[in-house]
Structures are given as structure tokens and as C-alpha cells.
Length: 153
Image 1: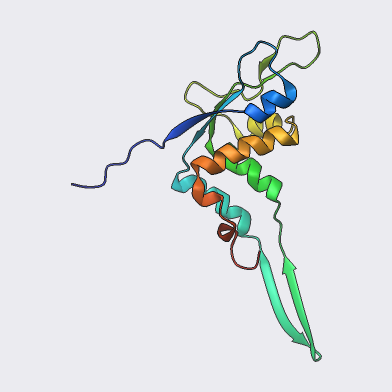
Image 2: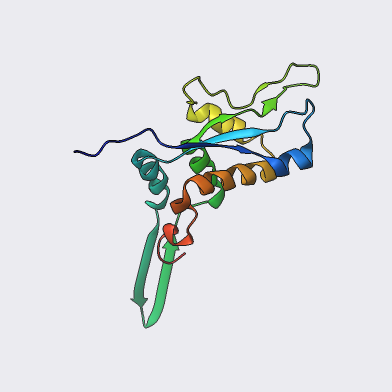
């Protein structure tokens, strides 16, 4: 019998620390749903590491080591969350008088454009972003390993 693929697993989390810190006006807990990463997500994530250049040379008897990278742990966290989040009930109001709406406008299929995700992500307090990222690492355990960053980090 050939390999039979099932949809990636999804897990819903309650953001308890964020709710404790910021409160929940209507008493409903803040929730986020995270799905297991696919090969496509792994490749997109790995692209962050593709621009790292290491050079080692001897220059006039002196050792010269140059490391150039365009890498940010915060960018990595945002991309990991974008690739795996499929729902979130955090709301945002543009003004005090505006009716709150979903901060992350996911479709009924759990999809969101990267641009819309990035705009929403940038509005989060860092502590909320960190708590969401912990949920991503719980579902995608292989992304939580420091060895996944490659040798030399």
C-alpha cells in the first residue's frame, strides 16, 4: 500500500499569558490555531538561511574571517508563524470608537495573504508575538531546535 498523506495536524491554543497581561473585555479567551508545517513551509523557512556567506582567508599573514548574513530571529519567528497559523481571534480597532475586527483576516480555509499577516503581526505587542511563536514551536518541534539554525550559530 503506498504512502497515504493526511492533512497536517492542527492544534488550538489559548494565549493564557497574554490574556492575563492584557485582559479579555468580553471574557472570551484569546485563541490561536497552529498547523503542522509542510515541506513547502520548511523550504520557505530555509530560504532565510540561504544568504549567509562565510569567508576565511589569509591576508598578509593575518587571518581574516568575514561572516555576512541577512538574518533576524524576529523575522524567523514571524515567518514561522505566518507559515503555520490558520486562525486567531485577536481583534483590532483602528480608533476607540471603531468596532473591533479580526486582526488576522483568515479565510474560512485558514489562509491569509502574507502582506495582511505582516501588517497584523507588526501591531502585536512583543509578548503576544512570543507566546504565539511558542505555540508554533510546540506543534513544529523540529523548528524549536537550535541545531536547526545550522553550524556556526
